[in-house]
Length: 389
Ligand code: NZQ
Ligand code: ZN
Image (cartoon, rainbow, N blue to C red; front, side, top):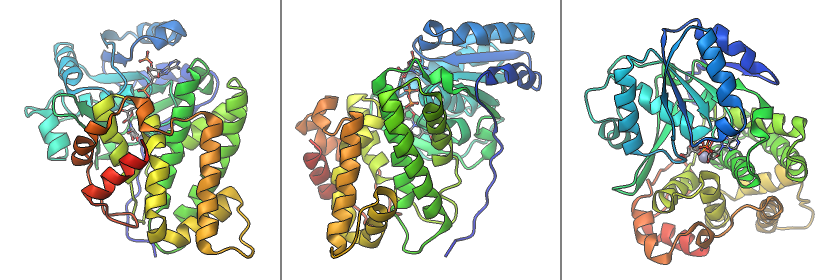
């Protein structure tokens, strides 16, 4: 049965080739002082930076830049950006990049006018902003996180080895607009493309493997998974296939734009373990998830057997005749593993630079949630890490 919920998603999306043409009109709604946020330089190589800067200048904006936002953005980088944005009297933040850049922009938006330590307030105490926020808009260049249409912002504190995501309740923290041109993702290296694809798949699984009843979200989730598997195989063979890349981009947005989770419980333990692995290794987000997923799902399978049977049947077309539920469910995970190998995903933590002496700390840094089929203990997390090694 669906629980009570509120659904509001104010992000305006512009999707498709040349959708950057809409940037100028959107910028006219905001103040003159714009802070442009981007990553380590990919947008300079593929020409997106020049296009965006020309539009900003044509729109008469005073532009300050925060460059070099790294994958898995850090607390130190956040503090540096707060300083730049305050000096520039930032009225609008334009993020051009992937999830790291957009998450960073959101964290910045709630920190510029905040008098407290943002890490402590938002990431340790999980408080909502009590100061005026600076609006964010984004141009997406890397597909996976769904950050373009949600209020999540993940920040890493390398000193304490904690990587924490805060999904803000206030929807005004979601990007006011998001520009999604699938051709902008063509320059992504294969490793990033498939890491993003797995991130999408994992977001859907996290919201699928929970609850006992047959709810609307689960049917939506199965459709999204089937579309993603189909398009990922085409993109894996030909990364320049526009149709496949555009379907992947659109699936990523729907996988984590707050729709699927409405009215049902959600799991998120693959992400909690993966994020802690990320805090210790600084590895690519999607690969931290692919490395621990199979061991995690094999571990919780007995607790959520009917859903794993449904997953095998409805997502992987496993035939059920004459088989036990356990056999069907196990075949489903086997099919998933086969697809992961096909894409070339990382399936072992050792490939990400993790070492066994880190496992105790990774387990301690894993936030244990209770929305899935089974609440893990620290020992179980260590067992999953060992099996993923
Ligand atoms: O920094 P540059 O030079 O731009 O290079 C980036 C980066 O090295 C590169 N890249 C991006 N677009 C490109 C490109 N290279 C060539 N061509 C392009 N068009 O890709 C690399 C990875 O970028 P990043 O933004 O780090 O990837 P992603 O989008 O996967 O974001 C990862 C971050 O998002 C968080 C993760 O934890 C991680 O910190 N997440 C955010 C979520 C949310 N807001 O809801 C949910 C997710 O589960 C996730 O936790
Ligand atoms: Zn993710």
